[in-house]
Image 1 (spheres, one colour):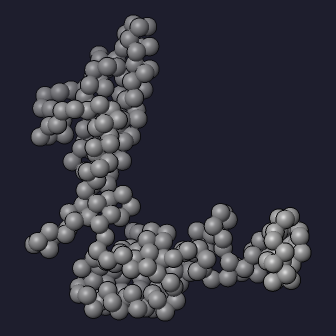
Image 2 (cartoon, rainbow, N blue to C red):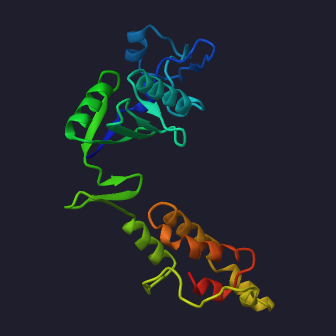
Length: 238
C-alpha cells in the first residue's frame, strides 16, 4: 500500500551545523523592542546560525545527510542507483524521499504504521494518506490493486499551449520521415521558422515522455534531430 507524508519545515529539522561551518547574520535595524528585550539583543547584533535555514547554499545537503544518517541508523539502506530510495533491512518497506515529500510503500498497513512511528521519533511530519498527486504526477490505485500514473493535466496544457487539437492512436504516423529537405530555404521561410516554438514543444514533450509517457520518446527523439534547422513541416509533426 502507498502512503504519502510531508516533513514540516524540513530544513529546520536538520542536525546543527558543524563548528567549522560558521554562518553569521546581523539583525536588521528596527526590530520590535519586545523581541530584542526577550532575547537580550540589540539593533545590529551579530548571531551565529545553528540550524540550516532556507536560502543557505548548503542547507539541502545538511538536510539530506540528516535524513539519510537517521534512516541508516534505523536499518534502512539506500539504493545504489538512487540515493533517495530507502529499503528496510527485511525488504518489506520502501521509502522515496524528495526534499520534504515522502512516498512509502509496504506489504501491509502495519509496515507503513511502523515506518511512520519510526520517523516521528525524530521528525515532525504530516500524514497525507494515499498520494493523489506526487511531484506533478497523478496517482490512481485501481480496483485490482494496480497503480496507474499519469500527467493528464500537463498533457492538456501542452496541447493548449501549442494548439494541438487532433489526437492520434500512435505517437507517430506510419510512413512519415522527417528530413532536412523540409528545412526552410528562402529568407521568408527562415523568418517564419524563427517564430515557431518547435524547440519549446520538443522540450515539453520530452519532459512528459521521460516521466509517464515513454511511448512518445522515439518520436520526440526523431524530431529533436532537426532542432537546429526546422521548418513549418517539422512543426506540423508535433
